[in-house]
Structure formats: C-alpha cells, structure tokens
Image 1 (cartoon, rainbow, N blue to C red):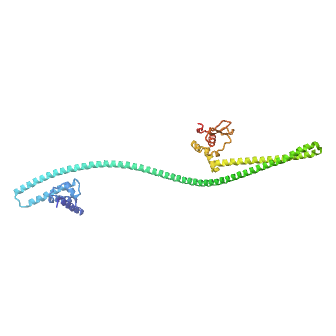
Image 2 (tube, helix red, strand yellow; image 1 turned 180 degrees about the vertical axis):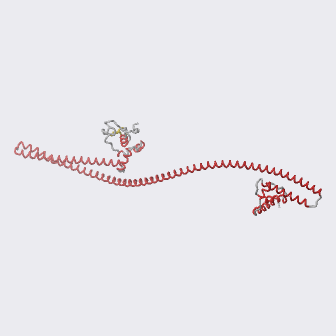
Image 3 (spheres, rainbow, N blue to C red; image 1 turned 90 degrees about the vertical axis):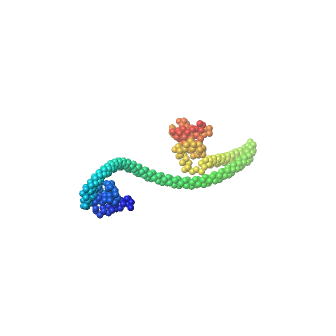
Length: 404
C-alpha cells in the first residue's frame, strides 16, 4: 500500500472516529500515532491538521506536545520496569535524555518553522483577503455602475418603446387616413368617369343635333332662297305687264279723260301690289338674317364645345380654382398651352382699382389682360388662362413673359 493510500485510510478512520463523538485531542493523538508508528513520519501541525480536518493553529501544536509527553512517559515506564544493570540504565537514561532533548530541539525548530510557515500563510491569506476585499469593492462599484447603466438603458428602452408605440399609432392612423383618402378618391374617380361618359354621350347627341340643325338650316336657306327667287320672278312678271298697261293708260289719259280715275285706281293697285311684294321680300330677308344669326350661334356653341372637349363643368370649375389658388406653376402653363383657354373667364372688374373693366388683347404670340383705368397688366403670357391667372394675382408672381 502506498503512502497516499495509507493517508486516505487514516483520514477515513479519523472521519469515523469524529462521527462517533471522539474529542479533538484524541483525534490529534491518534493521527500522531499513525504518522509516527505506521508511516514513520514525524508528526507536524500541517500533517495532523490535514488528516483530522479540525483544530486551530495553537491547539494542534499542544496536542503534538502532549503526544510526545505521553510517548516519553511510556518509554520511561518500560525502561524502569526491566532488570537492567544500573550502569546500562544510566547510559540508557542519558541516551534517552539526549534523544529526548534532541527530539525537543527538533520539535521546537520544526514548530518554529511551521509557525513561521503558518504566520506567512496567515499574512498571505490576510493580504489575499485584503486584495479580495479590494477586488470585491471594485466589483461592487463596477456592479453598481453596471446597475446604473442598466437602469439608464432600461429607461431608454422604455422611452423608445413608448416612442415606437406612439409611432405605430401614428402610422396606423396615417394608414387608415390614407386608405380612407384612397377609397374616397377611387369613388370620386368612378363618379367622374361616369359623368365623363355621360358628358361624352351628351356631346355626341349634341353633335348629332348640331348636324341635323345644319342640315335643316341648309334646307331652310335653300327653300327661302327659292321662295325669294320665285317671289322676285313673280313680281317682275307682274310688274312688267303693269308697267306696259300703265304706259298705255297714261297715253290713253290724254285722249280719254274719263278713264283717268280708272287708270289712277289701277296705278294705286299696282303700287299696293308692288309694296306687298317688297314687304314679303323684306320679311324673307329678315328670316334669312335670323337663320344666319342662329347658324352663327350654333357654330360658336360647336366651337366652344369642341374647345372644351370631353371635360365636364365640374372639371372646368376645378381647373379655374386651381389656377386661382396658384397651384399651376410656369412649367404647368407651358405644358398646358392653350388647351384650357376655353375655361378662362375674363374678370368683370380689375382687382386693384375695382373700377376698370379689363380688356384682353392678343400681342405677338400670346395674350395680355390690361386694365384701362390703372394700367394693371398681366404681361404677355402664353395663353388666356395664364394671362387671367396672373392678372388676378395682385402679388404678381413674376413669371417670365413670352416676349422675354
């Protein structure tokens, strides 16, 4: 059995003795016996403490001294009890005394060395303890700083969570508003498309009506022209015989005084017929002029309808409102050109002097709206819509003229 195995066996033996209630000194003495007699090792405070796992730094050396005292007492008894010669007994006593003194000296040196080791170990342990306390204090401070940073970070996280929640709520509200707006615009677009289709149908029917009116107008003009021609021919046909007859009557008047009244009456009748024919011709001329005016009005209406295209009055009002509120930039007016001039309504009064009536004039390749009272002008613009918009804008946006 090796020394380590013997030590392990001694530890188990001492463990069983300690569990059975044996006193500490007895455990130390038993350990000293096993070390000295079984292992041949001189008992020391460290070796005994390693086996017994009990006792303080001052108690174990006392137990070792007690072991040596008991060992000396036992040796003295055995030596004194035998039949040994007196001289040998004295020599043995001297030898044992020298051995004992030497053992004591060795024990003191060992004790001093072990005490020095214990003190050094104690000082080292104390130093380690102080260093451990310093490290613990530093660790506590670091832990406190970490706790403070963690609390700050937690507060920041909570603040960010609140901000995220608020942002999510705002985004949800914005999404809902956007969806509602998109839905409303879709409904409005569908309604405008329906109205656009209706307007297209109405424009188609209006074109058909205008074409039919043109056809009727041509037919009526041809019919009235034929009637006028026939009336003039009829009047000429009737006037010529009457003139011949009037000449003959005038020639006969010199001879036949009695037929003067008849001739005068015939002449009066002829004049009345001529006046009636002339009145009928005037009526036909008035009817022709009226039909011409009607044709001109229908032509202007057709031109305005073609200028408006397929836009509804609501869209025209929307375009005018956008132009009045300044939503059209110079680039927009340049892109639109004169496509929306049909929707430009000339103002009745000047926005500056309120007394003048603005006049629209065409200059070079553009339009200019000018007040004759205060000389307030829109400048030469690309289209009527832009000229009206700039004229009504008192701030004068300063958009470049076409001439510039």
